[in-house]
Image 1 (cartoon, one colour):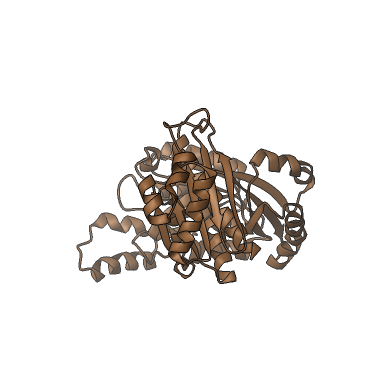
Image 2 (image 1 turned 45 degrees about the vertical axis):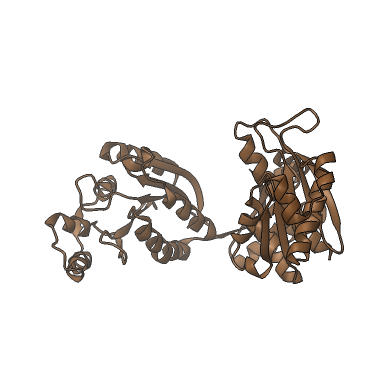
Length: 418
């Protein structure tokens, strides 16, 4: 069976922004991992007429609709009732579900109001999905036309396990393909520039496909293949991945690596190297991102936030003459900061950042967005001059983030030179 899916989340609280809809993200990832193509996300409030209308639209364009929410005991929990009526089924008591609801309250020695038994009423002929993390079971309802409605509870702690442990295996058994993807991470090229170089190839490809996604300062290129087996999908993607590595050897920092800090830490670990940071305008952001990576303590044990000139001199050994002649934001200061933190920490690589994040303090000679990234090691030392201002309203945050990204990339590249 080839499924075309839509996620239909039910809940007025989602529409009002009172809760974040994390369920759609988890279901989307799960469907992609088993080869089910997802085409639409929809959110509808706790209103049976609007839910009915949403179901009509969803099933007019897809044969699989996965709902979350509206399965509880209260009067506004009407998902089952609405979908059962849509499929022309009546609700009947499921004895196993009733027993589980009663046992749940007995286990916690809590009184059970009769409205809780509403949760044991299931559409006739459905596949019941027991809930091991709450009281509301889910269910799967099919009809002769091949339409499938999957009803899941709203709370993520209940929805997630039910979807992963019961719904995904059910769909896998009936799906005639798997969908596999690899994420290729680029740094040092914009989305439009990368797309321009790959446009002809992307337009010509059908399976696998290439799709670029922009992030602040970097680009993710997703390679996706559909096949009958995982091995066949991987075989389809292998030559594409190889060609990308050959075409962009200096721009790809990893495949499925996650982010720049993870790539940097993994490289340091693989080469048995250590690093230390000296930061001014980024205020510790480089260190923060490094220490977000599990196991980073093996390669990182030292960071200095030297915002003031006095700290640069006292802690890092930056010369007073350098600061007086060249200024805190300069190639010379960045070089001395990197060398100073390496000497102070005993690390193999010292990385430094100094610049003007704004919004104030810039000049014609040194505008906001001017950043110097320095690196010092026994085998390679350099300083890079960057202008990161893009005129954004959130320019300060953008400059600090992208400056930290450049520092992490330079750290990774320097380690690779060893």
